[in-house]
Image (cartoon, rainbow, N blue to C red):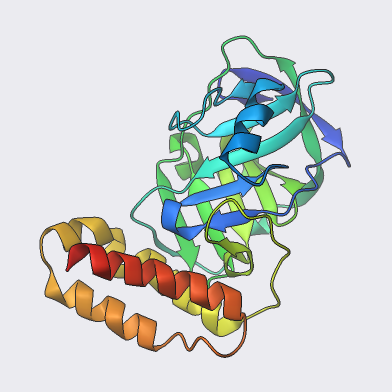
Length: 249
């Protein structure tokens, strides 16, 4: 199988144990054993793979330097999310395999970034696909669960993107390592609304001074009560929206 220019093998039952973190303000999903920028930098030094320096802008697929196991991911969520159907555009209907990846060929590895992001209306699936994944035929799809609620997607043997289940349960304000939060369907729906606000052109609309988008952000915040459900996740999403409003006003 191929992840960008890297050649990998599937290792049954040897996925990443780290809990995902959805850093909503940075549009990142982090799955790794580090809890800050310094730890992340040290992690890069003792692993190999794509994303070999901090803030490179490249998705990170890091493999153990000794045995080649996939040990961490840092995935960028493309701007401009749109709404996916209930099946995650069919990807959730693909049988899932539990396992990990092992790097077979590392030299010069680079991973294509995802070009589209989609989220289901209930907010239970965040789907990001590469150009290959955006046009993948159903009968050639493969889905590999490499970490809790994180699936890597393949079209044939080619990397096609990734999925995060229950993204609202993994909301994070930054590097902090957390445990999954209890289900909060209302927060999940509000998160989906936020990701798709302005038809996925939130920054563009704010730059253009679109008052309707500002009003929509305020109204959305008002529909995220902070004193119930997943209080931590609600606070993180509210704070993210407030930061947007503070910056653009």
